[in-house]
Amino acid sequence: MSAAPFIIVAIDGGAASGKSSTARALSSRFRLLHVDTGSFYRAVTAELLRRGARAGDVATVLPVLPALQFGTQVHGGTAQMTIAGRPVDAAELRSAEVNAAVSHFAAIPEVRAALLAYQRGQAEVARAQGFRGLAMEGRDIGSVIFPDADLRFFLHADPAERARRRAQEGQTDAVAERDRLDSQRKTAPLACPPGAVAIDSTNLTLEQVVERMAAAIAARISA
Ligand code: CDP
Ligand code: CDP
Image (cartoon, rainbow, N blue to C red):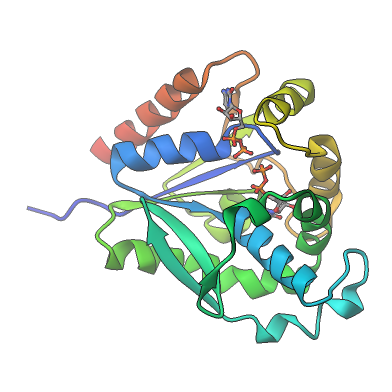
């Protein structure tokens, strides 16, 4: 009898398109490690700000980057980044300061390069902890991090609907502005890669989106 395949599911899309909610649901259904790479960019942003780096001033970022030591803790099936052995507080990851700065830092090629191997290494974290694969969400997972992923999804939703979702969560978040910066940057811009399964969730419930994705994963597993 052959071992169950290790499945890599890539989920990309704009802010509040539903990446985290769907990745969490699929992870628990298929026993995958949930990896929210946006939380990695947020953790790095919080640390850079703490160390005096400023958005829009690359010269304040580059000297700090090599000193950042990344690790991973797994809590409730989700990978959590540690920096110098410490996780960044969850409220800080979603603070107004981090919301405003993260896309600026994420546009810097050296910041993306510093996170590349760490993100790919999450597959080893998942294997070592007995997960059947990983569901990784972000902006460039299906295009850059795991272009050969077993399944690649790209979630769309109307910008007004996405802003409404964030406001309903009580967050101050310039969703449209982050999308603009993420889509226009030169390195790994937000775009639906060729061959990815595109889903427009504007008029779908979370459950409907999850069912569509789960059906595609189940078909792949049994193929
Ligand atoms: O949750 P939300 O979609 O609002 O954002 P997030 O996934 O937490 O990502 C925060 C920011 O990190 C994004 O706006 C991007 O600037 C950056 N990011 C990225 O550049 N590449 C990724 N793979 C993930 C996030
Ligand atoms: O991770 P990302 O920023 O792409 O989005 P999310 O945090 O998963 O979703 C943002 C909010 O939209 C959450 O409160 C979800 O419950 C909600 N949502 C929704 O109402 N309908 C969907 N089809 C997807 C997400």
